[in-house]
Length: 339
Image (cartoon, rainbow, N blue to C red; front, side, top):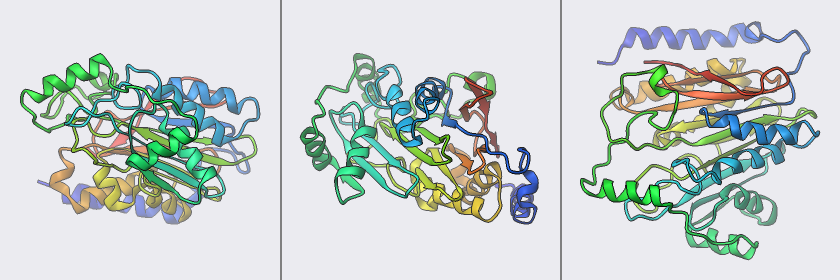
């Protein structure tokens, strides 16, 4: 049963953040923690390292987030992002990504095939077309016209996993299974098969005080062909407001879309919530709307405000995020959770 008392207490705590406002900030008055880059999951450490190289050379947050998540897209061993991502139930790897800068410019690609770096194609959409989103064959045609080279994204290990899945063809993803730290953080797994997908979302604040964000994924493993989650949708998987902060999400994208999650987190920060409190309130709204569904899914939010403060919150235990700033180069933190 849904714990109503626990929900009311948590909601009251989050709502109280409006009145407390800046009182919860850890930084001295007038101090901004910049540059800084944060990203979802423990594989964000490698992504942050690449982004940090850009930021320490006085590079833009936009360049940093593109370079950062590109590292994960190219790994081939990460079965939730880019090359090597697990395919849909037809055996086709389709990729989704979006990017957003400090001016509110944004670009996205949905269900893109044969291109290793959807995040870079998304940036080209933002900078070279009058559109925000391109999907499917149209996204591929545009990528090829921009000089991106087609390739087979299905690695032998992912193909093997798909063929094994076909024996039962049951769609029941486990929570946090991609997270290497999961066994230490939350040993009790919920029922499901051994495959699940976790997005990499990245947020950066550069030396000039500008924010940008990027989000990229291969989507849910063995999904219906053509399924698109929250990751490439501005306002759901990612949102940036250079006056306030930025947010990104990970987990079951359908629930994030239904709540316009990342936009919600940013708007809550506008009202005075700290990043963690804003992420928590967004999670609580998902739980309130679908308490029984929430017991068996994971959704997590990660946010940063204009002062360079960050926070995260998730439905289930096991959500981690990586931080890189002048004081921490490879820090992995556990996000707080409802369950």
